[in-house]
Length: 362
Ligand SMILES: *Cc1c(COP(=O)(O)O)cnc(C)c1O
Image 1 (cartoon, rainbow, N blue to C red):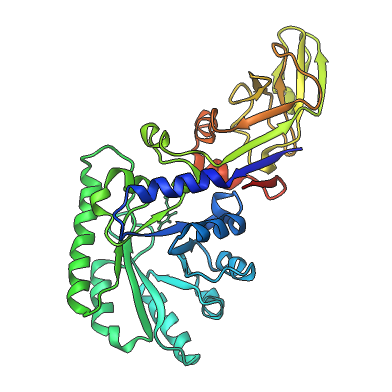
Image 2: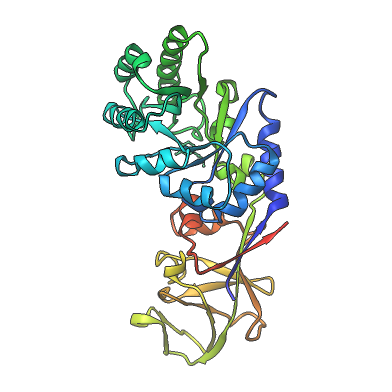
């Protein structure tokens, strides 16, 4: 009943739009972590490969293994490799981002034990986000010892923490300056330097002059870019729809849902939709926050969202059981839906449960 429709034509549009803003030589890494932002990594990755993405990127090794098992054999970067997954990274030819000196040593040791040489790796630098990454001095240490490692350094990168914020932005400027200093040093130590990259989706729109050799695009592929004027250039690829499974007539003073989350102020018609907080529609919705679209009208979500269902007020809407209900689509976007509950499209999309059927439209 509840379905997430994915439009591959729109994915193509977004990929082409981003590519169109880049130099012809800039490569693209399509970020399909967290099951392609909750939309379904296997199908979308295959399409992205057909569009010519140079890399895929996942967060954790298991996600890369899932793609390998599905027969995907393009280069896959693991952004946040875990020590306990090193064997599985190597056995599946995944390319880790080396983010700490401890991880560099552990990964080198594992490769030596397996008698592997020239293993493709990436260097992740911390330039101010203070999440994961090597400090400038740890990069120096790496460069001093680089010939002792069984690595082939394919790229060096950092991640901006506020790429969507209006320019000029001193925080971002500082990050860029730090990264350019690292870049210079790395270039000096290699006769054949690796690729350098810094930008995510909003970075491509806001700081195109720093696209360097490669950009890492996640949310933009799925149709959002963290600012209204950029969003307009993209097309949300996912529509979430459901159906009204039952309609109740409730009298003035009667309540709806757990803990009497909503009390009818007048005789009302209440519709039940088969999706709830276990499906990613959090309890931040409900009690007047958020609404769904039924027969062209907005039906507010009333009461507390349940685990498997939610209720909407249909009093002002002409509708019958089994009529379709749209939670978000290209007109009423996931970004707008998320915003009503104080969150962002990233969190809403990645929370959509696997039990919502994914339907691919090509
Ligand atoms: C998730 C992620 C991206 C993609 O960011 P978007 O804003 O979705 O384009 C890029 N780089 C890194 C390191 C990430 O973790």
